[in-house]
Length: 89
Image 1: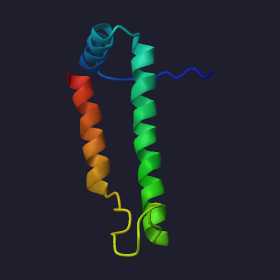
Image 2: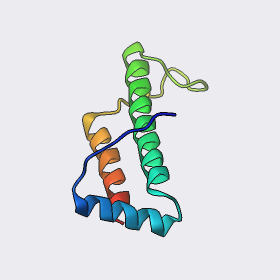
Image 3: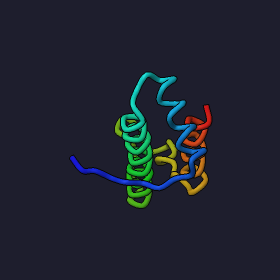
């Protein structure tokens, strides 16, 4: 396991501390969860883009159904906004 030092405004730190407390986890665990969710969203977007470029369809679909939708930058921004919403809760 690695150690990471990050710099952030005091107000952001206080909000993270409050959110972690409300969830009953440490700030470290909260940051780990947020990082994991963000990386998962990034990986999913990459998989969708790759499959869309290849024109692959999910198993079980016939030839008339649409191919897998392409995740867009807007989708990534929506995921980021949702993550930010978690921080402001």
